[in-house]
Image (cartoon, rainbow over all chains, first blue to last red; front, side):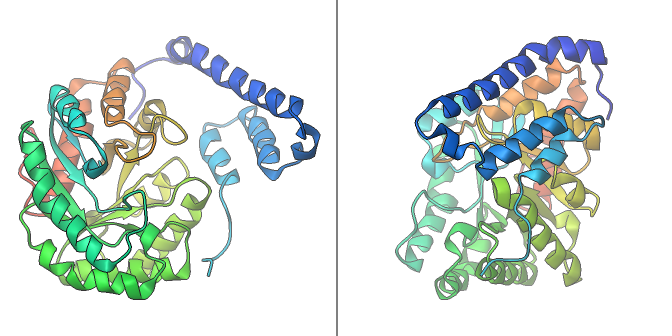
Length: 80
Length: 270
């Protein structure tokens, strides 16, 4: 079921939302680093995953969302 | 255009939500049995809960011309105690025959434990024994992919489960494709924050088509809003899709899946 809209039309529709979401994420990184103890959490695995997610956004392909969700998922067998 | 809300926990909502949904052309809603925001202190509390959602909520909804249906189960967030859960399961059959109960749900996993899986499997068996539809809760956030794979592997290996009578809810980009290709129904739940957005739901529809796809909202005790369903409908129209396609996703598809229960009254629009 193809999008009825063209790529330029979708870019016009979503550009400001995309811009805002990235700026909000950057501001959150800054906020955490400025706060007391900021340096100590800088290598927190959750932040590492978000940095990796930002790298995935820059890659080619049309399944970035799936790849980021898989990156953020736990792995392994059933827990006891 | 009529709309069906397949997933809303009205026990946690005020009458204003019924009023809002009615004004936005919602004609039928479904309330899967789930956690109530706290752990019940006895199995008997579930009997009261099942009575509430199968008898009282339909009367609240009817005041707004909305048909209220429900699903019955021991939910995964309270399924870790196997003995407790089995006591609840023991009186589920008396509710499955009620006129507004559509099937067994929302069963599933929460933290993907072995005990949760035992109770999931026992409730699948109960559903099959009583010829019931199944509505499945997939875990949230980082546990979703693993839990979805565990349940899919069990159902595929079972041999007696018809995928067309099972709907996996709360699916996202990393879980919907693996369920859809196996013939299961997939529902996408829209939240104001942290999970599926209206935009992402329509992305998934454009990628995988309309067949066996359902959209629902997130009316519960946390940050949620039944109007997110209507936000998603509006997003689909903003993206240029036809009224016919919108009607298929938000009305006809739930009619087709839920109609298999033999109890769901709304009929697909021809």
